[in-house]
Image (cartoon, rainbow, N blue to C red):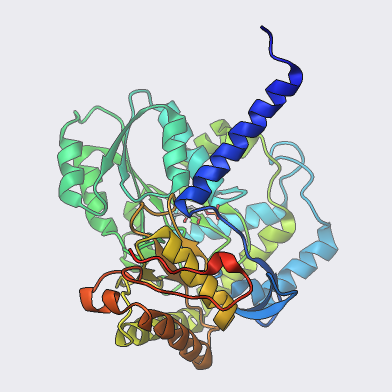
Length: 437
Ligand code: PLP
């Protein structure tokens, strides 16, 4: 019997509700904190939670250097807005190509020592559009993808429709073993990141490029969590390791270290021209607003000329790591600016971050599956040059107090979740946790 239209509509609703229920059951339903950032006061902001409004300290932003607040960046954006208006008005091909875009692409090419660069509306789009287009252009292409690559690279590789081989995270022996399985004539791309944002691990870019040369592969490097922050001019980790010239395609964002928005690739003129000409994610979408391009250009130029932000950033990250380790917290130690604290359980992770917010006015978003693998849930702290000594004291005190309620974790050296008993005094009953793992 034909279903009525009402029944069909109910079936759709049932699908949505059951998908959401599954997330609740696993304890990884996402809620977004509503923030109002106050210009000039970052990392302090207003949060709209169960209370009408409260002041919070943000410890999980990817505005790593606070460049979203930099007066030079703001000045450039104000000026572009006044001069040119709000939007670009079209795709790059149809009326949306401005001198702001060209100047920014020239600057990015120069920053990375490449012949050309190409802007996208985000680094996600840049990864997806570039990788998928590369694979489609080279029939039979095999992509060798690091196991911890970001979702945007995974999406691009999948959309390319070619063969994918996953190599163990940062394991060059495994990468080489997999490369050996293909003849030299097979087109290959090695896709990897420089700084892995959830663990803070870093790749040996030079060694990967050597393998690429030996086995005839192109290298595609995501520097999203490194641009602005590593090397004397902020050109990223490949530049810091003095191997940027060996990488074929560098991907970056204008949203994190540079504090604005947008993404890009930098590569040879021919490669950029091919992507510009064939990638639907570049062609069929409105170009970046000129005001964003102007802000990003100012931010890049500022960070090429000033290293203080980078120096203080490193110092803050080291200090937070040291202080948390002294307090006995399970910091996942690494050489980067990211400070992950292992929790290993999605429910505990959320309870801890809820308690940080409601009791201590500290905003940290829990990091659960699918952002990280199940069982490796964590708190990811991102110190900035703008976090003061007092902010760090407060964070360490808060996490230590919560940690003291987890005596088993201390004795077993596990993540914070083991034996955790966090009772939350806030009015928000959903953040009360008494579970013992
Ligand atoms: N690549 C990596 C490794 C990322 O972590 C992210 C975002 O977090 C992106 C790409 C996407 O960057 P964007 O925010 O510019 O889209």
